[in-house]
Amino acid sequence: MSQVRKQSIISTIFVYGGFLIGFFSTYLFTRQGSVFTTSEYGLTNIFMAVGNIMFAFANLGTLAVVYKFYPYYNDNLSKKKNDLLTWTLLISILGFCCVIAAGIVFKNLVIRKFGGNSPEFIKYYFWVFPFGFSLLLFSMFEVFAWNIRKSIFTTFLRELFFRAITLVLIFLLTFKWIRSFDTFIKMYAFSYGVVALVLLVYLIWKKEFYITFTISRVTKKFYKKMLSMASLIYVGSTIYTIALFIDQIIIMSLMGTGPVGIFMLGFVVSGLVQAPQRGAVAASIPVLAKAWKDKDYEKINLIYQRSGINLLIASLGIFLLIWLNYVDAVHTFRLKPEYLQSQWIFFFLGLARVVDLGTGVNSQIIGTSTFWRFEFISGMVLLTLAVPLNYFLVKHYGIIGAGYSTLISLSVYNSIRIIFLERKFNMHPFSMKTVYAIFLAALSYFICYYAFYYIHGFWAMVLRSIVFIALYGGSIIYFDLTPDVLPVLGNIKKRIYRNRD
Image (cartoon, rainbow, N blue to C red; front, side, top):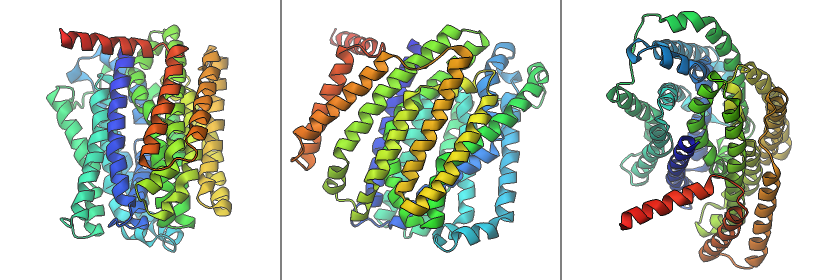
């Protein structure tokens, strides 16, 4: 657990560093006097949404195969004879060729659906493809880096480096070194390509990247299982990705890219709530895969329970801290007035993230187990809920409807997974500490809300935040709700004393 804890903490630091850069970029996009319109900000986020959907279709389930079977290759083959990277990479590239073909065939349909309300998207339609392909390559390299325990570096690239590239592009346009948004968006289309190239060079430098077209004995032994797993996981993961990003696509279709920009501010801020999950996922996947291989159910249950309470505590604290200060932040940092509409978008999306994180790393536990077929079933449930709910609720309630849909869909989705793991393996992420954490978070919130009710502005935000962190963080430590806080504090103290000596 110490290795998972260490990698999770360092990765989470990088994630929050990336969010600082991302928030500064968002501020430059949304501030009063920005060179970007609301529609242009929305379009950059549509690139991310559509790029992720392209990646989901193109990878053909190969990432899940790497999650599950890499330990078998690593234990039985030398690095130079490990052909898992070769075949998964080739299959993914072939998958993206199919995506390109589909994009050409269905272009007229896309124009009919989005041309009326979102002409900007139609104008840059084909520029989304290099963005999606770059994301695919990076994700393929990333999953191999995770398995050789380089998740910290990949988190740095995804969370910090990519956002830094975006920030540089924003500065270039803001200070007229790039003369038009047209040039900006075309350069943005290749931003993930730079990140993928850096990771590729790193893997080659570490002597972890080898291409071999010789079919290994491990591939010959497991290829039928890998194909079966990939086919079902592929459908399930693609459905899950569509469900995650369908809200932006539906808003763009029904309302245009401008409302997408408003929605995306709430979406981006809600990403802060989900940030702790990213580091935990990257660190836990290789450990879980090996634990399933070794049939170490006790370790799997321990990771499940600890991830549940740790991620719940972190997500609740972040969610309530942001909610306390959201309106003040929009006014204090002088964002465009229309972005205040994103307040309730954040509330429902943030609450959905708390539900998702509070159930621990259930997706990774199922995905690395022999019951990965359940990914398909639960993914179908999620998509069946998300698409009609988004369409109906956005059509009737506007962009806030997407927030309702996400909260309902993710709550049902995670409930199904909790029940599955409880019945199959007698594992669950909850305990009385879960109840205590929720109670302490709510109590800390209401104390701060009423204590600073009539105080506004920058310093009110600072004081309100300090008091909330002290109350909530202090109570978590005092009641010892997580076994991972005190060891971390102990390590920090040891390092401080060593530096003094």
